[in-house]
Length: 388
Ligand SMILES: Cc1cc2nc3c(=O)[nH]c(=O)nc-3n(C[C@H](O)[C@H](O)[C@H](O)COP(=O)(O)OP(=O)(O)OC[C@H]3O[C@@H](n4cnc5c(N)ncnc54)[C@H](O)[C@@H]3O)c2cc1C
Image (tube, rainbow, N blue to C red; front, side, top):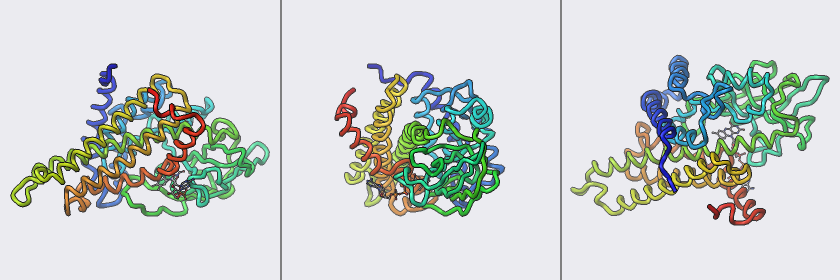
């Protein structure tokens, strides 16, 4: 069994590392101190994404993407995940659901998004619909050949900079017809109600949106009426793998920094690492990271080899749960090794510690991942997780 990374995968990894070192790390402190980056800087970074060939990595070359396979996307997300302030979000992954767009939608939305000329945000969550997305109340009512959307969406990541939204609604208010709509942000009736502050410093915002009598044509339906949940399932697989890889990168950076500090810092006349309490923390971090990395690379490779959709969905939950919880444990230890310095915002470890907390919440909480895994064991048996 050859477990070495193919040259193309290594090359993508190096490209992403170069991009992170050149474009992301130098902007971390400015972002942390000011809470945002100036539009001119964001524009420079957008152009740099294209110059480094990191635009549209999750889409085919024919639609202006890079055509990266899952393992290539994974190593890119690992490298970018080392940056604080979620600066990895500068490298947008146009929603996978857009692949199911009509030829016109591919021209109008997917291709320009892959070229970084347009940007989407995904609006599913509502005040009464979080983990249980079936509880959404936002509805699209048919009026002749048009639809009228009314409702409210929360936590819409990158909603501040996106120019269009992928909105999940129930057509005619019918929960049996969950449907995705492509809605330009400039459409009358779409408005940002407020932009709350969150634990992490995130390069973009997570605003709340109100939709008031928003009129869209039939052509705004993505996929088909009633296909909303099915389309978001593919998105969850992709997003959960990306989160797992981001978490891996964050844990590796913290581990490297903590290891260096433990060798440099002296107390009681000895290096920190000479205290077994500290050495054991480093050893545990190494075990956690190696376990996680092996699992993530394995599942990404399995997907590239044609893993069926249901297994991919089941395994993506394992990855997301394991890696996000692993990152929390590793970041906590790294903070402890730095002592008071680990609590200072100028320390990347402190920032990463805040950054990774949300990875146990978004794209399905840890509890929901366990619900999915438990359900798979019940329906399909233990082999889904134990076979090779
Ligand atoms: C920073 C941030 C960005 C986000 N970005 C987006 C975005 O771009 N688009 C979008 O649509 N949404 C987004 N979300 C929303 C996110 O997906 C939800 O917050 C998440 O799914 C949880 O929903 P909730 O917050 O309503 O919590 P709830 O569903 O109310 O859950 C609260 C608690 O109950 C637990 N719980 C719920 N159901 C069960 C169960 N069956 N079994 C056991 N425990 C359960 C949960 O695990 C959690 O611990 C974002 C959230 C955050 C914080």
